[in-house]
Image (cartoon, rainbow, N blue to C red; front, side):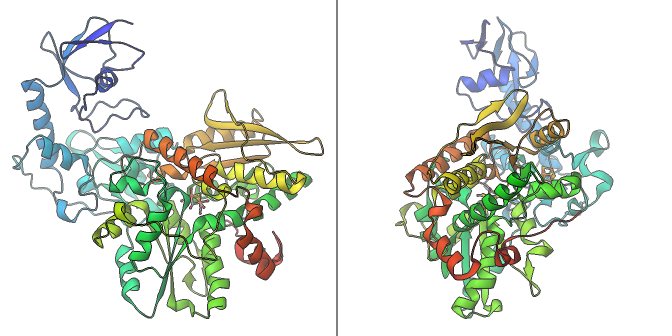
Length: 568
Ligand code: HC1
Ligand code: SF4
């Protein structure tokens, strides 16, 4: 308790862990590269320095507040120090801003601009290091790294993976993977959470946008797009809106203006996934086989399961993810119905996630030498396409998805956030078993397990399904260990690698912190409640697909086209 005097104003201490939090509380935007409320304190960038009444210069992020402290945040000395820090960072930085995909979103660029740094004072004669392009999800360019350590701490502390770390000392310090291998050859799970915190262009995602433009300009090729649930509540941020505004209609309109021939909704195939996965789960539950059942629509979790927990592969749902089901549907059913040769159809999906690029490249998800999904782009990449085409997003009239793969239920849109898939499955299972249409299930946090929520669902025969949802790979690891030791016991666990689920994927607009993620989740909740139909079983166009093609969930046809297998 007590007060800190910040810039001559008494500010009450209300449990803040450090001076930086107190300063931010007063509405001052302090510059920092290495401070994130969700990560441990690193205190390396020294931009958040403050001056005490005794003339001492201290980092505000690593100093706890104490009653009676007197500090100033913007004295001439502090401004000088910040400028110097920025100039030193620039000395070692690859300054090719015009061709950097992070340009306009780079914190280093922004701060140099704000601080009026208009010349390079310490131009180092620096040897360029090779760019790591081995991963289909993440490009790592050390020449743009400012050693803030945000990626290292996110990968280790939030995701529990540790694919990258600091190597060497002092001026030779670098961020590296073990043995400096390409990311694709490490234990990296492609989640892209490092991209979400990188302040510069050191971590980005490789883009297929140029290839897509080429296909759009080719009159011989029909180009279709499928939009993931979490994109619709984040795309507006690229056009100045708050996170969580549901922009489905304008998103569809923009994509049509870009020249896509048809715009489908990944939510349609999320409903399809719910039909398939609920049937699969109920079978396992009745036979008490391969429980707990783990959801498999998050490709970063699937990779973690394959590489770190191969003994749990049998517990993974064999359902393809909605992205993959969607493409399979197009490749095996739509082309026949429409009489389009496969090489004249180009299938694009827009995802909040960079691991979806990895998923799309998996060998299981290919047919006759073609990957089922031709290109995956992120929410941010799509926004750039829209901007480069001169489309004024905010003035677009809303348009609707194309039929047949454009109709979906409320159950599908919530796939984009933690808890959504499990909720969709419970709604569906309840309807199948009782004929009742329920919407929400009450999930409670589990003591001692951050990121985990659970619920007990009553079945008509008196039995109960123990359900849990967990997001954030570090949290997942703790839950898996507790399942092994029987400290926790569940029948079905929904697992998403990114904290908050897809809304926080590595391809979402920046900033991409929990604050934005929570608002996007609210947006998906709104989108769900706005829907007339909220149970996958009520999707009449999915019903039609079963009548025409698949027959019934988990049928031979659906096993052939909608289910997959995993690697050890
Ligand atoms: Fe997701 Fe999914 S919800 S995995 O978070 O199951 O990326 O949005 O598209 O495939 O539907 C991502 C989102 C997405 C799939 C669906
Ligand atoms: Fe770590 Fe995920 Fe980044 Fe890979 S993508 S380095 S696992 S944070």
